[in-house]
Length: 217
Ligand code: DX5
Ligand code: ZN
Image 1 (cartoon, rainbow, N blue to C red):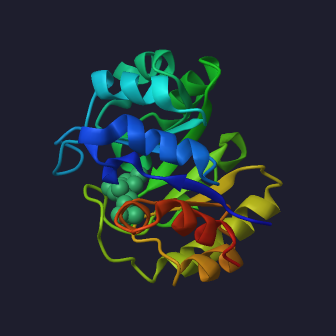
Image 2: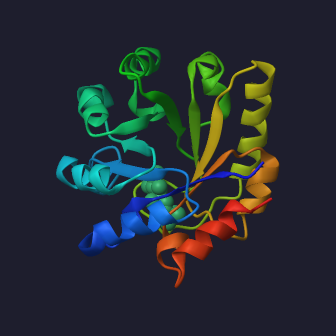
Image 3: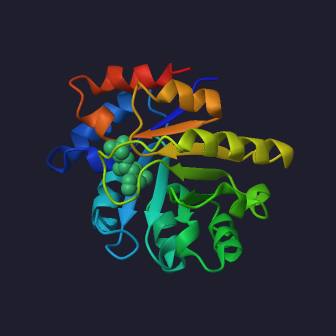
C-alpha cells in the first residue's frame, strides 16, 4: 500500500501561500498537514486562524491539523469551523485525553493523538480503539527541518502491533525529518502516513518530490 503523504504547510512560502497550496492541490499529496504552535507547549509560534482561513479557501484536500498547544479543548470548535478534517492533540498536553478525543469526534472530525519522541507508545493502550490517528513525532516538535530520530522505527513497529492486536483501524503518521532515505523503512515498519515539510518545500521540484515519497516502500 502506498503511504498517505501529508506535506507540512509550515515549510511553505507564506508570501506565496496561494501558489504553494495550488501546487499541493496538483500534486499526489493526500492531506495538508497544518502545524499549530502556541509558544508554550513548544518553543515556537507558527500561525493562527487568519492564515488557516486562507489555507482553507485554497486547499482542495483534507486538512490534517496538528495542535502543539496547551489546553487544546479551548479551540477545537474553531478549528472545525476553519475546515479541520482531522485534529490531533498531544498526549503530553491533555490531562483528560479521553474526554478531548470524544469532543473532537462529537464535532464530526477525525481524532488523533501525537506522541513526543520520549513518550512510549504503551501509554495509548487504553485509548487506541477510539483513535483515527497516532502521530509519532520523529523530532522534538517546534521546528521544521530537524534531524530524524532513529528510535522511531521501533516505536512504529510496536504501535502497529498494538493496533493490530486491538483490531483498531487507527492509522500511524510519522512527523519530522522524513525524506526519501527513511520513508521506505518507515512504511515497512508500519507507517500509513508521512508528513514532510522541509524535504518537499526546499526541493527544486516539490511535485516530483511528493510523488517520490508516495512510491516509498
Ligand atoms: C514539527 C512539526 C512538523 C514539521 C515537519 O514540530 O510538527 O510537522 O513541520 O517538518 P520537517 O519535515 O521539515 O521535519
Ligand atoms: Zn506536525
